[in-house]
Image (cartoon, rainbow over all chains, first blue to last red):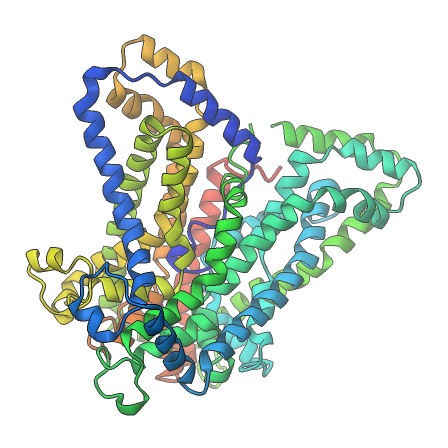
Length: 323
Length: 304
């Protein structure tokens, strides 16, 4: 998928099932669970394995948040999980925004611009396409569905160099369209919409509207679209996250600093950190400021995550349960 | 399957103008088809064209493939990625399935939900952010686990990022960001195992271990295959992690580490677009075959 990211994005594409189904089955299993006391030692062992992994997954995030509130000296000498001060956080923010004359805000603005425009195009394209694949018959439908599946399962990085060659040939390198247009092609969104319509919207409903004299476009706009709100939100969520976190494509297409999205920009900050690159001199960015920049770069996605947990689960299970 | 039946059924039943519907269907997918051609098929064709021609556009057969394969970095890059893939897929299968089973057995209700969410949080740091975080975690001067690193014999960042460790480090980073999502998926799949099956195992006297090994894991099989195929396809494309590491270590570690970095170098450092296209085509073949094999054989997506 041209829009998703590297190995980590592996987690994104998936399939379909309502959140209510998930919670229903969860209740079922909790009722059936038995807790024999004789297994106490093994239960303790299992619980500590779960706890170790909580530390593994959470500690780096916690450290990152705390690091942004400290000075570089504190980072090295204080305990790793100590809290710095609000004052230092502000100082770090000022130092960060002073870098290349507020480059970080420009990168954030770029990221937002690219992610939102692509998201809008994705929705306008993917929702009607998924609807048509699910609810209508037309020539080439099956071929289109299969190619959608194959492209969807392909890692996005596969097409980066070929896309570069193509975009270069039409002279769009260095313009925002060089990433917005490839981002807008989002087969996973089409697949999600397709699954949603095949499983959640009865065809008879559309047939009834047609019989009442509705045009095909009218059926889509007046009947199908209002029913599609959940899947629109879901596609929007995955598309936004994929666009925001993509690194390779913009890295190749937009080499100029003033056009970089924040992921690439923050990656570039690395070479201005003296402890990683001793040759930087006066343009330096210190480690706590880099931590703060990382934090700022992920905040939009983190916020979306916190508010969209329900979507995450249903999206990741999509397609799983088509018996 | 039910979907298939209902869709053909209603097509037959449809009274009013299948032609009208067909036209409408085609119109609804038109924009998507244009994007599919422009950003899926066309770049693929373009890369294939470049891979089999030279800078002047004359057909050269497999010359570009041979030259790039003989590049002194190529074999190294392929073997790096192979080692990384083994570690990455192994850790995915063992830990994701193991953790999902533990969560399913031990943590019910709110606690389980909270744990799954905590495991999932690093997913928000996909891309460059996860690498930056781990550069800190792996730098003994600032790492919260510097004592652990010390016990393992690592006292400087340079020692941690020694060439022999890189595959493992990239595995840890990828696992940290990606595993939580898969745990959620596996957990959901475990919940889908019918209650009677679990009950029957219990009545037959199966303990937790036997239930997991003989009932749950076999029933998770298609999900595990799904995860392995996507993990394989994604892992083969390794790029961000080594690229950022090479930035952070000023080229000492991670430079020309993966095959994708090599395509980047061919295209942008050595100006050998045709060579870059040849390596891209090889990666494309890997990606497309993994995906196509899965779509065709798994019965996972019923493309009716």
